[in-house]
Image 1 (tube, rainbow, N blue to C red):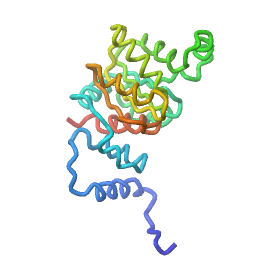
Image 2: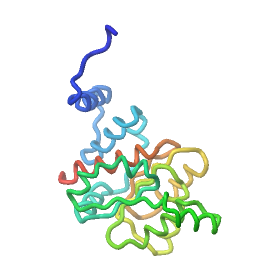
Image 3: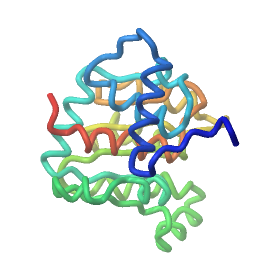
Image 4: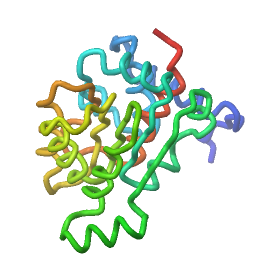
Length: 210
């Protein structure tokens, strides 16, 4: 117990980010990407994201513009949906949707022998206005988005491709990175719903910064 340092509850997050900066040392991060990378590290305690998070050109700038234009955020898990700061989203009139638990989605997926994530992405593609997809769990969601984009049925304002796992995860992320669209991808096997939510929150918290 002697090594435990008391930190007032309201200062825990601030102190966490100070520790992250201390451990990064002299490493200079891109100004636009820095808040996103640091918040993902804060969420995961994993400094591999410094090199694993891949950003398409101007992805952050385009994502912020879409958020300020009242984009709809689509997640592939209710966990990611729950983790997004609703107050920050409401500031810009941003709606957050997840169709994964919808009964009719499950029924259609079962009938077609597809994943619920696939059906959810199809459903989301019919929403009007700018769309931001935050995928932290299902590589099949990214595969379906790739198909919809290449078929010119959808043009997302941003795809956050950070599913975690082993089966088709790396391959699905590579598909997204092969497209000429805005994306933020966690290259390799790492990721998760918490990472997807952290990226969205970082974008929302810093939307006014250029």
